[in-house]
Amino acid sequence: MSFMEAFQIWLMAFFTLAIFSFLYRDNPVYRFAEHLFAGLSAGYYVALYMDTILYQQLWIPMSTSGEWWLIFPGFLGILMFTRLMPKFSWLARFGLAFVMGTTAGIAIMAELHGKVLYAIRGTIADQVSGGQVNYVLAAIVVIGVTTTLLYFYFSKEHRGVLGGAARVGIWFIMISFGASFGYTVMGRVSLLIGRVYFLYSDWIGSLSKIF
Image (cartoon, rainbow, N blue to C red; front, side):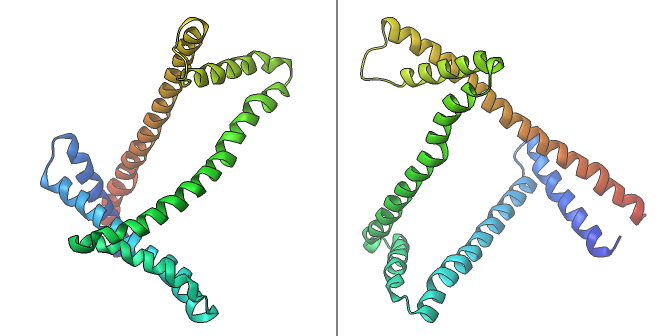
């Protein structure tokens, strides 16, 4: 094991233990690791956006292909920095409104084609075409989707049949939230196992190679 490899392992172990130190209480070592991580992340994304957006998508097309119309979105981007000057901070609303409008339009189309239509097809077509074995599961999926949508139907008071269907929808929503929470917990536990395995195998293992 080279000196640089050992240094990297010990550096990773130090920051892993620094994050774990929050289990005791908030302390300077944890805050140092947290602030360093936030600073490195901010610096990385600033450099990434400058290279991929300002240089590759703005400067290169204007300087090589003569696409000088890109100066208008670039100008809107510059207006975003007027938030740093209270006297001219209102100018940032133009760039912010453009970004919010375009982002909402792109997100709506992406959600419609990537989730809504895909969910409708998965609810009806794929379940029914699975054969008799999946009929019960298909019925549960259809009932769950229908009652969940009825729960979010607020144009009529939830009474009678509509109220009963809405209460069934609440149960499906709670089961969905529980499954999502369990999936999140499993993901965090998987990360914890990975960090503990690193400390046990790489960090402690490096001691035998060094000493």
